[in-house]
Image (tube, rainbow, N blue to C red; front, side, top):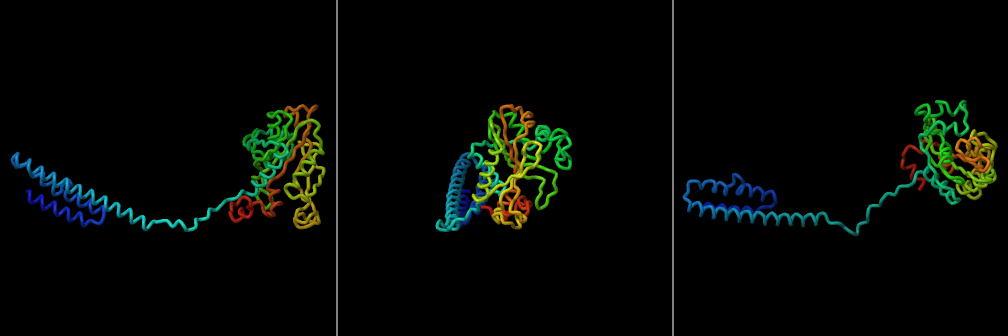
Amino acid sequence: MQERLNQILEEAKKLIDEALSEKETEDIRIRFLGKKGEVTEILKSMGNLSPEEKKELGQAANKVKEEIANAISDKAAELKEKAKEGRFKTEKIDVTEPGVKVKIGTKHPVTQVIDEITEFFETLGYSVYEGPDIDTVFNTFDGLNSPPTHPARDLTDTFYVTPDIVLRPHTSSAEIRAEQGLPTPYKIVIPGRCYRCDTPDATHSHTFHQVEMMVIGEDIKMSDLKGTLDMMAKKLFGPETRTKFRPHHFPFTEPSAEMDVSCFKCGGKGCNVCKGSGWIEILGCGMTHPHVHKAGGIDTDKYTGFAVGMGVERIAMLKYGIDDIRLLYENDMRFIEQFK
């Protein structure tokens, strides 16, 4: 048995020295030290030996077992280190190689216009105020002096969630919330998303954005409104921009007006953008109707104010020369990247 153990040890050492992978060393371990391994079989065969012979053979077998296990462990560590060195050689990094350029995104043109408008009004002391996309019929229509027969209240114009709740068709619905919740006087600008039952085409979308502007204070006049909007137009479209106000009708303002700006493309001479008129309609505005102030709990004997509503997509299309509103919502990066 002793001679057989010596043969096993020599054979195991030879195979371990020749092993080229960790898998081979594991196979050697199983062959000699596994449950059915050669050393294990010798230990199992000691049943018929005398106690002295068992002790002597057991010590010899365990010594051989330990030597083989240590040799396998050393070889496995050696092979693991060589494999790591090989990976270092094949996976080395060239620190002089130029890095991959990170593609930087850009703000959507609608977001750019909203930011430009709100930042301008913030320089004049306005605060940004936001209302919910889903609002009450009262805040959307009744509180804004819109009669029950107003066509904007029809199902063909407005999305109704329930008979008393709608997806807001304009950011003006936040005016009543502001009047009821903010201490007077105040100056606010209200950006937000709006919804109307429109079939999408080049100039219409069922989802769009508006920016509302509202001022409440003592002795606020129409001249304050006109001066503020003239400054805004010059900020958005350039210092040479001129403005023109035309009488109009909105239920929630009196007097009401629409504001035109001189065509930024032709300078007012007439072109295809302004349809030969030299002017482009840009927004609706007016002095807030006393009925609206009463609905919001404002003291009409002390305070007056004005309100402005402008379509962001329309301004973006005019400002950047976009001829189809659907381009703003197709998520085509080739289009968006033009506005960096």
